[in-house]
Length: 118
Image (cartoon, rainbow, N blue to C red):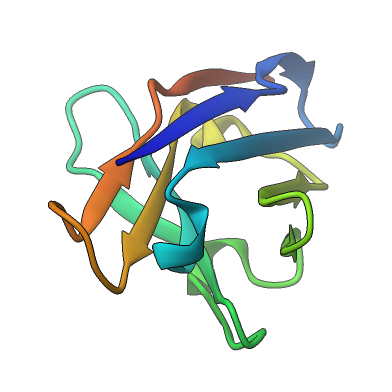
């Protein structure tokens, strides 16, 4: 089992920055990919960015150049640095990890609200 605890959401004005963190615990050796998805009101959950254990990064076009994902494998934490925030970035941001073994292949954090005012 893997447990995820997110932090760092909040309210920010357009153009501002926030940094999200997600700390993993439990069977951390099984974790391969760590990432962030978001869900805005009335919309489907969408990928923001992922980073594999080896460092391969996948970033959504909508946040490319503004958001940066990084990972500290030693501390089992994944970060999402969000710059130049826009009102359309307002959503609940969820941490997600994919595992290589264990009872489940995917785990979710509880979600953290990010609100960008215009």
